[in-house]
Length: 349
Image (cartoon, rainbow, N blue to C red; front, side):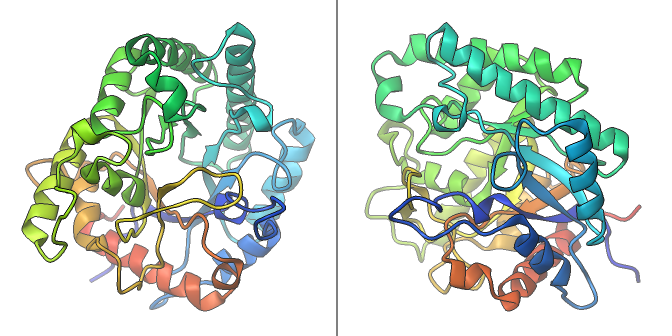
């Protein structure tokens, strides 16, 4: 019997950049190194199909010309890989601004979204990008948001709505990745509230990362939305399953992009990245998730039927040490986990 071939399996380029490059952190890992490791990974004859990209220097400049994008697309294709979702550099330190900031900040945020959507359209026209959205967040911490939760969420929603119209004009869609470090997106309830307020289903949706979303059950930065007690006994698998399913059930209708990941129930930050849900290696003995089973909470509906909404899924391993990321065996194991998810929750075309 032939194995499932959908959703396609992608690696991510941004773990080579996120939490790296600052004076007190490890150096950035170049795109070519990540392409080589991704293309070199193999598990039971299976390979990665593609890679999701970081649209910022030193990988791919958000200000790239159409000729630049043609060259980098040809380069990625030479590794036998396609392209999926993007991370748009919407943060202030990368040329953007807060989604709840003043008009100038919001204008910079929207400009970065427009540039990313333009690159997305170019790559679709080239034929290297058959699926994927443009990832955004609120680009502001929980502290500033907490000064006026209602007003600030409305402002973020206005910005996301304007960004969604830009995406529509380019034939793109946006995926907002909720993490405990992003104001207005730091709990499962706040994410649902924000997306409902934006009101653009199918255009502005959610990017579910298994590690980040798992922290929502602990109420990190959002005590009122905690689903498990502070002294939770992790051996109680049924309670974890119920809490995690509640989060997934609330956010699944909005989910348009999905990251397979592992988490040990703690937070972690590196370089200039705020603390958020820790990404663990797939075989970490302290990992709290049953990755294959819990991936099904996102890839199947509440009745257990496949949603088939995601044409590709991606691995996210942000803030792993470079010594881990630069070992081929790391990516062979990751690919093995991705194949297991696809075997359990995929389909064949």
